[in-house]
Length: 173
Length: 301
Image (cartoon, rainbow over all chains, first blue to last red):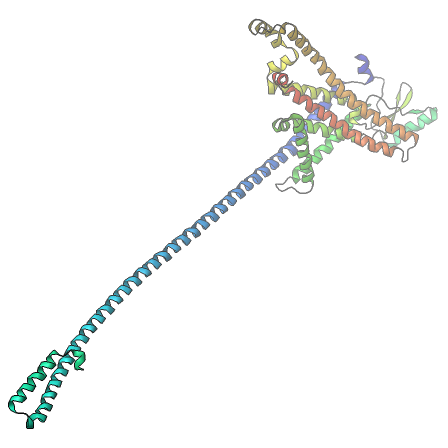
């Protein structure tokens, strides 16, 4: 051991001095480099992680918004379709109602027309009958005034009136 | 040591006078590379050697560099901060591969990385022009000896031994703090091994413990010798490589001073990095081993 000490001039004072030197190096590097650098790197890592998380949250929100938008569009489409269907149904119903009412009205008008027509027809028939009777009476009266005696005359009139009374409306025309 | 006379307040005139005196006396100047750092001056009882001076230069450079880096540190890295961050991050990843835990790496790196930087700077400073070649002449035992003002810090066993002792002591401090004093003590003096023999024999009926545990106990004692070996290994490896490199460069320069030493300079640059890395990595490995509890090691084994 002594030979090693003398050969290499080992000196505990120099060793301690070198230890102090190294301690200074450790302190300086730790205080001026590693500590602030580590803090900055950690801070940056945290910022990046936070940004990534925020970006993820934004992406999730965006997706959620997109889904909500699509859902809203889908709901609106469904609602619109429902409204259209309802409107169609309502329109159909109204049309049916209107058609029924119109048909009923037309039927009523037709019925009234028919009634009126029949009435007028009856009236016309009666008028024609009366006119024809009057005409026959007048003509017969004129023709037969000279030749027909009173009894013949009355007999013919009675026969004509009986024919007229038994004749159908179409035949009379 | 006492016979050595230190030439104080040297200047060119004094050196010229010394050289003239040597020339007049017809003596040759010894440029022999010594195994030890030469004293340059004394402060009271304290001897300042040329290797210590180089270490101070290294410290000065580290302080200046650290202050510059400190001023440049920003949230958004630019310029030199980018390089420093790459080195720091690379060192952390490298440490992770040894420790296997980022938590441990963060604890050990403030010791291991300065160790690497300090050793690397000392290794490289020893190769700079002027270091080992500018100095003064001193009469030692009637012979004129050239004493360089500066010598590579790690080309002095005092430096490497101090660093090695510190590294090994730190491994024990970390070991005690991180695994408990009892666990750390049992790594070397396996008292628990002896204490558990009755339990293993009578309760667990494990009769092999009678033979195995005493062997383990003695293996633990051998570990103590291993700790001394660690110091010797770390210090002599670094000192030997760097000193040999300086001798090699000196020899090459002596053979042919122009161009011939250049390849060897590159070689020594690499050796400087490798030796600093080996020292730092071994320290990291020792720290990792010491901070892994003995039980965990046994289970892992």
